[in-house]
Image 1 (cartoon, rainbow, N blue to C red):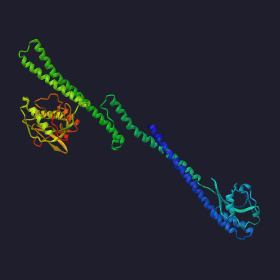
Image 2: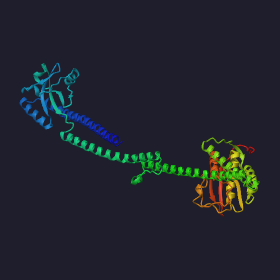
Image 3: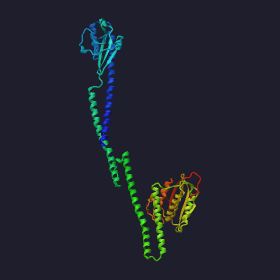
Image 4: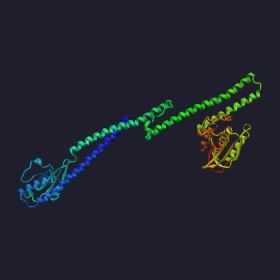
Length: 467
């Protein structure tokens, strides 16, 4: 990657130099050519107009040379433009053939010259100007006597070219240095991220990207590094929770199985005097196993999105009242009173049966911590139908509030009773409510005690009978 970035920057710099350099040279050449044409055309018109006056030939030659020097022309000569367009030297002083530019006029240019216009002929190195000289004497029989002036096209001086080459070399060296520096700066965090992700893929969930001082820049690579670190932390926490989940479930399975196996063996050996009591213990542990397996199946279906929900509108107050009535009918739960005076008729949207299951888990959890009373209310808040279950227990420590709905989470406060031994009831509530488009949250009441709240979308049709 470093090599590719460096090459890319150097190529970009070189292309920019060539593009700008050739553009400047082209513009300079066009400008120099136009300037050379201006330097010829005006003096040539002035000179020919002046020479058209009757002037002695000897004085004419002297003034002709002075005009060339005065106007800064490279060459100023009398020439004869023949009828075929060729240009040769003319006048009393015969010039060497090489002193006259090797040019030839086409028919249009000859016509313009004859009409008294200035004819300009340009090439890459010089500009040649021709204008008819009217006081041409005998020369008219052989062609047109004209004044020829030349001026070189000086686009860029030699010194400017040298400076251009030197500056281009400096820019290329600077581009190479900047490319190497940028390539190292970009590739270092990418290489660190690659190493960290490879370690995570190999099972090292404690690997982290070392952001270092670059974390203060806040660019995209730093954001990527922080995202990788967050992903690793989440995976590590998830793996720890899975390990804790398996250990807890294994313990919860082993405990009733051990009790059942022990009493079954005692019954087989005839060591139990009270078989009815043994049967009740076996039945209790069997119910406990059945509850645990049921909770695990519910969570597995929720995780696999295979949990069937019958989403429809229903009266949340009716479902909550029926659920509480079922719990109150259980003789083992008569120690705590359930206050349902806060229940009201609220139209909610969800699965009535699964909502009853979630409310039952919330109420059952509250009864484990309550001293005497559990309050259940329902209403509307922030365009959601809510059920709120509060108790008069010790409340939930602030550090535990964000985690009470996690699977098998163990808080600082432990209930003395354990009617729900699996530790999955609140996790099932969260999954069920989320599947129905709702949310759950935990808080502490103003006068102490914990409050667990379940929010469901409001219903939009007439309520149906809750099954």
